[in-house]
Length: 601
Ligand SMILES: NC(=O)C1=CN([C@@H]2O[C@H](COP(=O)(O)OP(=O)(O)OC[C@H]3O[C@@H](n4cnc5c(N)ncnc54)[C@H](OP(=O)(O)O)[C@@H]3O)[C@@H](O)[C@H]2O)[C@@H](O)CC1
Ligand SMILES: Nc1ncnc2c1ncn2[C@@H]1O[C@H](COP(=O)(O)OP(=O)(O)O)[C@@H](O)[C@H]1O
Image (cartoon, rainbow, N blue to C red; front, side, top):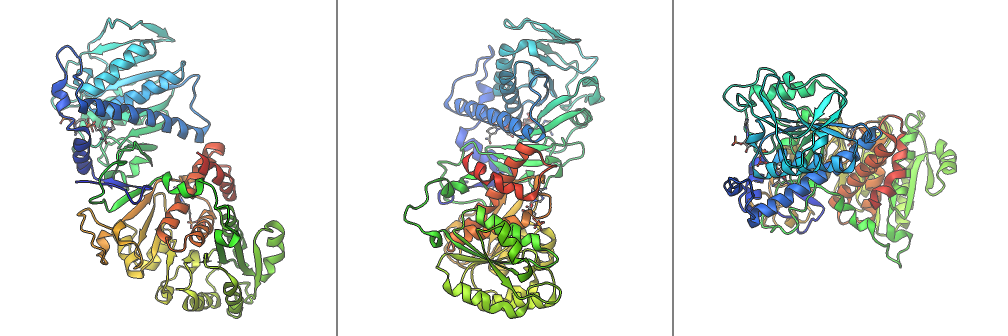
């Protein structure tokens, strides 16, 4: 199988564990051979494939350490003066990644110490993991301790560079364990994982490197007991390397974050015990041949590239996109304001906002950059039918680069809903239209003709599609309505079912893309892992609607990419906000202050 992203450098394939195995064998030249290349003297034969795999493991481990340390900023930073790491190590590359990450953290912070648990015993380490372990032992012997199951015989090696040191009550140093019985690996399983751990100071970080994508169910009870015991300890951040060990099996590792190394594995999506997913792009797909494509893709920060350069020196404000917003009601005035603010802060040249007339003067006073147009109100303070002429007048004067956002805060009043239907009947097809919030009603879907973006959260998706959110139902629905659908959630998924989409971007795994319209099953679903629970507060969807509106206005002919760009930018800004201020004490609109940082990092 060949995977690639030549025409979409901003999206990488999501593969199953089995597909990753195949892919890895191709790019690293068959890793299993390395096992045989490990000579009795412990020297690793320097084949080209092992050098590549070692380089990839180094890259993965370091990227993992960087990502973990960055995530710590959300809770005030890594405790670099007194941090303790707990590293759970299997026998394969997953353990190797964890060991290299531990080495990077120990190398950065001289006061940090680390405890290691070799779930299958240290002798079971495969060549590259062993190489990573030797490197650690050589560099930081006095800050490491191997935790042995109580009752196992243990022998401290006289590793030439190992000096034993005493940290408080704990003896640290390079030890070599000789388990009497196999640890959690067939044969006699350890009776309880808790035998490894004594209660002590909390761990800042636990790195789970027991199993990665080569995990084969079931999870044996010995390993499960070690994972459970580690799970019962006090730990600041639980990080699964690549995949949580044991995947979704009973007793599997429960992560706060899972860091996918190089390839996002399909198995991680939807696993509750994976916590927040992070994709560490190690450049594996850079030169891959795009003869076929995965139907699931992960959006990367590359999607922001067009916003990172210089603006066209000859452009005027209309060339930067004109966003029209129909939003707000007496019940939800703030939603309109947030949507408009977001459109203004995400590059739009002009924003014209139609809001209930009662709010125009106060909104104009607080956000003078927008063109505020007072819309006649219903007796309840909603947008009245009679205001439609205002939209006609203003749209007639606008340039080509424009988009219309309808929905934030409009409420469900009948007259306003009729108005939305009329607006769609008249203007859909003339410019890209985004429907959000209470404008997401099944009855409107038949009234649209032209480029359309829908931004439902899970509940709105159910209302619109009468289906539970999933990749399959998203594809079906997007194709049925002929729209770009942005299904919002902890992982936001985007699917383009519009008939005008570029067919060469939509080949399925089979690589049979032909330029004709294909079945929904072949439509790619783009996943954004960016953001996080700091976004779980009122108004973040209104901001996203404004941001997508601005991107649509600037690129009315590339509505999929415009939507993915805004989703990623919104998520990256949220992450920057969380790193700077944490997730609890922020206001929704503060996210806008981090849009710039998100572009520059
Ligand atoms: N190419 C990439 O994308 C890159 C990948 N990288 C990293 O490598 C990781 C994959 O490493 P890996 O191939 O060494 O396998 P891993 O998952 O560590 O398993 C180790 C061994 O465990 C065993 N085992 C399995 N199930 C079991 C069970 N139920 N109970 C007991 N034992 C079980 C089985 O051994 P066996 O039993 O067959 O001898 C298996 O071979 C990947 O997730 C990522 O972290 C990065 O370095 C960057 C580049
Ligand atoms: N736990 C979470 N992790 C990541 N993103 C989240 C999480 N919860 C909410 N979001 C994001 O926050 C936004 C919420 O949108 P929405 O529910 O429409 O909010 P509102 O209606 O209050 O504006 C979406 O972009 C969604 O993806």
